[in-house]
Length: 431
Image 1 (cartoon, rainbow, N blue to C red):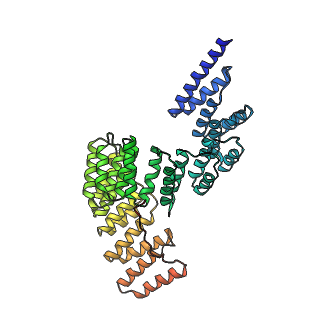
Image 2 (cartoon, rainbow, N blue to C red):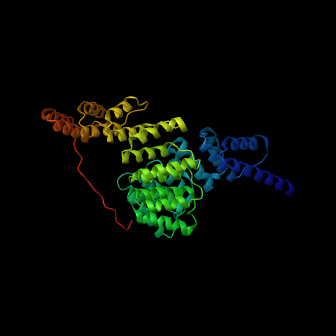
Image 3 (cartoon, helix red, strand yellow):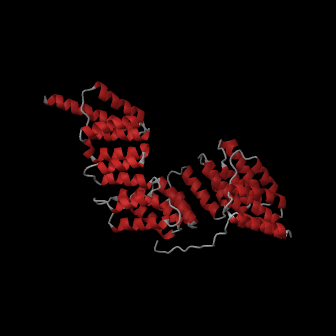
């Protein structure tokens, strides 16, 4: 009898390891096949751990019907009290069905531990409902852990207005509770530090990563390259990048964008050449950085060269952002008719950025007819942007056509379009 139990246990353990291996390598269909084989062919009673694993696969490939059957089974088997089964079910309902049903299930779960709380809070945070995530955090009846804070920090960092400041404040709260930030914490925090150009915080994250042995992680290093660049500390961006053991396309693109952002076009283009020599395949983000570098430095011919190479050499299809950059650099160089031809030939939707670049250049170079075309297009793309009306009025006034200038301003007022008040912000070093 004892031998039979031992064999059954070993077989279950073997199948569980196989399922786990499939899931860890994103082979979810294979994981479900093993699960079906166990259920249909073998007389083995499954434990809660197997169900928690299978629910992860159901979530990953959206097998809600199977998950619903598993839900009924685990409820009858009283497995819902297992926090890993419960959290996996909550996660599945939130990602594949609805947040409302996920919350309903969450409220019905007995003896919720921190894993179950984290699942529900994370769902709200990643569904752009950070307010509800924070409300749930405030009523937790268990002690939060690092992962509880991570999802909320990431959610806050993604908000506009004061989201970055709130994310940093929430991070400080985490540290005050004596919780140690992990890699995922730092990755969530970096966008917030960039959002308010908090160089001191970027340095703090970097220093902590070095002390904790997280520093060599390529995703974090790429994030630091970008963060230092956004904060204007190109020397540190450069240092982090060249110390990286493995430099992938994200790292190269981050460094190119950092130099492009601060007008160091020649250096950005030199880095791109080094990237090519290193055999790293550039992507859309890489070329966007290259085109922005050309735009900031007025390198129109170079921009056309790299724009052509995108698809010809690397098969990268340009999107509206790439076209907008090309229009911008041609417009800045006074080649407004070429810029207009690019717009006319765009196979993707023309953005307000492209028309705006052309309109601005038309004022600088006195191209009234093109200005009228651009302004007409902008009135359709973003009818509530007062800057477009004001700019066209200034172009008319600049060539002595005061009546048309007044007509544009009058039209703006009749449509109820109002100019926004100017604003500025200050970053405190305490961040």
